[in-house]
Length: 302
Image 1 (spheres, rainbow, N blue to C red):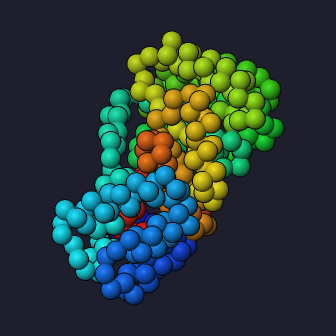
Image 2 (cartoon, rainbow, N blue to C red; image 1 turned 90 degrees about the vertical axis):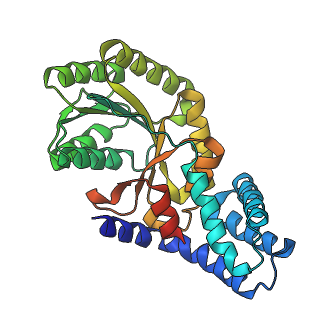
């Protein structure tokens, strides 16, 4: 199983690897000594791989420290050293909360990032693991959102709670909680509207949903996951910062990693926002939404 997942990850990161690792190898193969010129060339490669300026500076700083500590003189040794730095950065402070018996996932994100698809894949994944899953169609703002989620509920063979388009999202969540309790559901996944251009409405809506979850379903472990599109690169980081102003975020679902050379954004998100990436999408299939593993990611990247 791991081999298959790793191959998918490796395949999904092909474009990133072409623009990142190949260039690094090229620079290191030509390098005679480890000097400032070498660091500058590595810095340029990292920035153009969508790792971002701040994160790149941090990586180079840590790389220099490691090279000093380990008394590395051979440029060929820089690559494994850089890999260790990136892996450590991704692993830093990633203490995942233990799941209780009952779990709620509140899924947020702007339209077009793959939010509904991610919910469908999460539902299918948890159903396959033997969990009882329920979906709440609380994105009542966008016309097609309820229909799309219903298609996924049928595909994943899980129940859905929905109201009409334009109805109160919090009311949908309230009904979904009652259904989750009466049907003894293990996982409730709530879709929500992603209207960043009207942050006040979004904030009020999410606050109301969170209040209802706290009041009506206090014994469930609750997590808010933000869906971001990897192909947007540094814009994904900016989007996450904007959402963080509206509500606390426990983790990131990063979609469309297979179609982009911007895989470096995973490192930028972790470093600049200090939010763990929980899931990554490396393909179209249901099984292509994978739990993020820092070591596997670094392995596939290099």
